[in-house]
Length: 267
Image 1: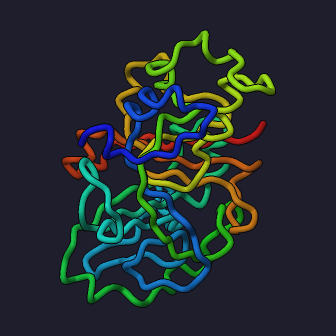
Image 2 (image 1 turned 120 degrees about the vertical axis):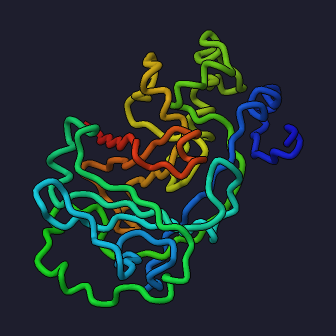
């Protein structure tokens, strides 16, 4: 795909940087949560997951059922490689997840699992009474929401460590508008990337945890980002962010055994 196929929004203040922005652009699927009941196989936040007869609902190391956070049915997406064209990806977090991750997100109890496309989708588990009594005290969502997906290309986000690969550090504080706003001011306003999404570039409240660490930079693909939104009934701690990262090669192989779960709050 050449750069002209990457149709991205560029404001007039940044038009002289068209080439840099286009060269950095990556595909992303923006997720719009709509409060309504969903079928078990659909893409959603919260509610009830697709559980097949031969599957078990994930448990944490304390043998407690995990809480169903999100489900992505890739047949509803239009993402190219390394993302799959079909199948369902599910995200679960422990009932004690919040207290575990507040200061040490990489030690959170969570589960990401992939369900290949199968005729078994037609025969899911319907009885979820086994979840009666689970603790939703710290769960970040108030209700089930269907996900409406819109795919686009987006430039490197304002807080991604790779921003410096496309723009000189000296440019950040340089005035680029008639009202003397800096490049950084404009970029933060336009390309903050603080949305629910799959793919593309992430948003960080404080800093990109991967900066300066070749080991952590292997988590180069944003698998899912959920941001706090009071109107949608989504709130993690103090307006926090929930993000899952994966290596692109492992994603292409449908290997979800190595996921980095990242949480940030305004503290």
